Image (cartoon, rainbow, N blue to C red):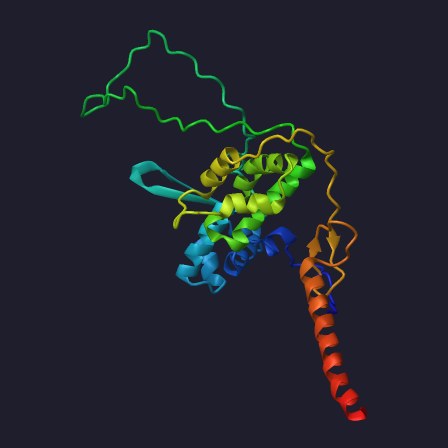
Length: 296
């Protein structure tokens, strides 16, 4: 395909290919994000719903797109109460993925700091809440269960490859849709599988086989299976070789892929070439049959 591109001199917005080619963002979500990023700085008080209206996005599609952007970390929203019982909403969009604490730090103009250990309150009087007696909370806790520690001995190339495998799960199994933050937290566990000799196929089958009809928390289920089904450490581990660098496909798709050896085309283009060669050979064989019969 031929392409003719002229870079604009003004009135343009820089958008990364990660947003344009995002595997989990719909076209409506990408359009809404790019439309919001292209707005002038003076229109910061306009809500995202007004931007969707300007972009011609209907209410139902806007709600779905907003949910996708929030799940992937491109959109953050806070609601808090102000004077006289009124509520105020603050929204933020970003052209990069932001964790909740990073977004709050940018909102407040500060850097996220590590939480300090709480000081024990010895001898401090407590006041019961107005209108009712304190609730007995013995044996209860609001702290979530601790997550298993991430392996730190996994080489960075295997962590990167494990993250790519996790990101590809949502293409074939929508019940395991993981956002960018989930993939970042689970990539080291997936890399541990590869370090122990598991293939990408083994990892995908272990995560997708026998899924329940409805998955309430894809990240929790994936973490559980990665930990519970972790293969045993082999007796002799072969040296880990770094993966091939990314390469642009020499075929017609212009896709970026990671070759296994020295191939110059992605898997889809190689399959298309093989099918075309097979069809050509069949047409030649069918064309020679009648001629041989006629001259016989």
